[in-house]
Amino acid sequence: MACLLLALLISLPAQSDLSAAANISNGSQQTGMDKITEIDIGGSAEVEHSPPDFSGAWAKDYTRSDKWDQKLQLQLDRMRSAAQKQSRLGRDSRYGPGVISLNEGAGRGTTIIDLGRFAELITRSNDLIITQTDNEVRIKREGEADLICNGSGQPIKTSSNEFGSEVCSWQGHKLFFRISLPGRIDIHHRFEVSPEHESINQQTQVSYGKRLSFDLVQFFNYYGPSDIDQFNCTQTLSRGKVCSQKKNITGSE
Picture (cartoon, rainbow, N blue to C red):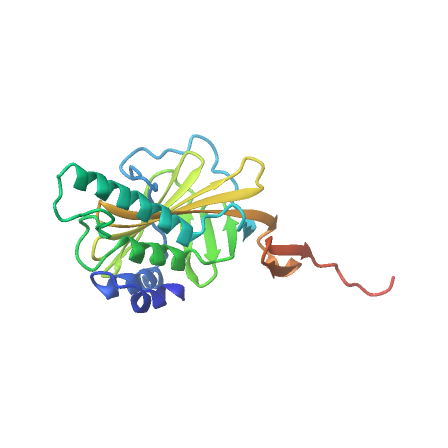
């Protein structure tokens, strides 16, 4: 699983915190919830009508999805601009022109670059295979544990152990997950399906404490029901995954 590689690739305060993302999911049914810019999990989170239909097989749309390295560069540029402004105002003597704090007060050993790499690792899946019933939504991702939530409108804690806790919730027509790991590390996912059931918007945030976070927005296009055995798919550089339905081969009539 991709999460098992995180501790080897990212230098966060406690490297075991990141590998716990895999352990917490394997410890019981996995999920978590929250909004990317702070979801109020204590709110009513009521589903006014039936939850939207997320079911199906979905392929990542690379033309519309964020590229993590470009998103990281934009955030570094904003941080650098803010640091230069603070230096000019004489509010922080630590920073001179072009010098920035990569951890924004989040603690030693953790930087925005670490969070960007982490976010990229846990969102590498090219496909989402989603099954949905009246009682459960299950999101299968390549190399990652399934995200699972029931159909209730109230926040549901789906797991809690030494590796962290997981919560999911519906808020209106959006589905939220939050995975809270030891060491003040949170993973937030928000899923929203288009009214025509043609695409899914997935927004992911990795945060450390309350001051340092990195967001990625990705889009997935519908290409058929969740039974992927019905399709032949080819990965392309320009269009991502292109799929066509298999023809039924029957005997001569």
